[in-house]
Amino acid sequence: MKVLLFAALKESLGPSIELNIVGKTVCQIKDDLAAQEPTLASLIARSHFAVDQEYVGDHFEFSTEPRELAIVPPVSGG
Amino acid sequence: MIEITDERIDTEAVLQYATSSQAGAVVLFCGNTREFTDGKQTVFLSYECYREMALAQMDKLRSTVMKQWDVLSVSMVHRIGQVDPGQTSVAIAVAAEHREEAFLAGKWLIDTLKEEVPIWKKEDWSDGSSDWIHPHE
Image 1 (spheres, chains in turn purple, green):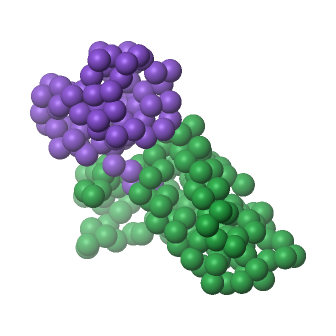
Image 2 (cartoon, rainbow over the protein chains, first blue to last red):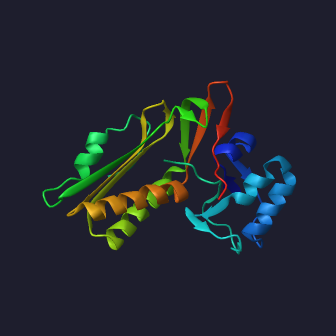
């Protein structure tokens, strides 16, 4: 499914990427993506996932595709 | 008032929105672009947000504050896009009957916003380089 990206992730990979998520945990998806994009591995490891605009933990498992999914790198507003 | 804007923040409006005749104390916090960080010069900051989620999170922070402290009203505005040194990127106003609650709630709001709300800044430095800021926890 289409996964939204922001800030440094967006600058490197574009505003979204296609990922297979069903049956995987956030942790597994992050590990796969980090292996695919080694220069971003540290940033991906520190990022959170937001499912339908709510944060979920690294052990959250996707049984279905949510309406919206985003990878939220560490925030720096204010 | 919970807003994300591309325009200069009208801090007087943020303050007025929180103010009421019941409030004996109104605290206004402004987060401004700092020109120097560890000796490096910032030309400007660029802010980006995940808009719908950021607004929902800001609204949640307001609800939490209204429950936890004796606060009458909260208004919060974050600017995105380019913000030059000395300009305001975020303004938070908290009104309460007494100052103690207003200061405490205001501090909690800006501290938590900086940790949780999906907004990011990029530093454009005077040497021509730029960095997205992604803090290490």
